[in-house]
Length: 129
Image 1 (cartoon, rainbow, N blue to C red):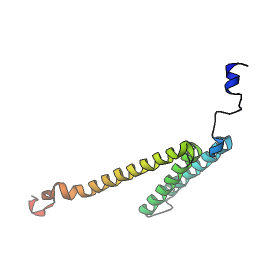
Image 2 (cartoon, rainbow, N blue to C red):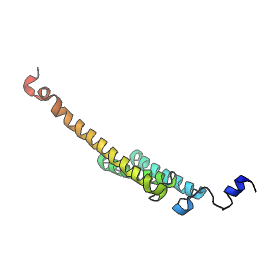
Image 3 (cartoon, one colour):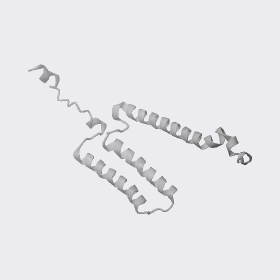
Image 4 (cartoon, rainbow, N blue to C red):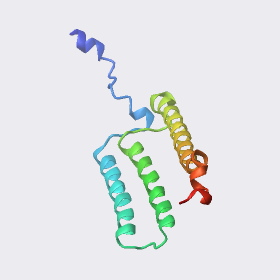
């Protein structure tokens, strides 16, 4: 028996994905692809067909569908779940989401208050020519 045969004689396949519930199959990829296409076509139809007239409502719906599409990509294409890599992938994802929310909310807060806090003398009507 060669060294290679002795190392792999125990019948262990190198993809330990089955015990984690991750199955990279053609049907899994096609399901993810179909969901991604549907989640892309719906917002396109909403905007191009002028289905929703109020822009804030349309924006919320589009953002919700985008969040669902991110989850679909993570599950079907990146094969992420709570068990993968011993839970470290999920912990890294939660940490990333927290940092993005802090960064975005801080940036929006700064930009919202920037106009009134930076140059209040420019807003004074008595200084206008």
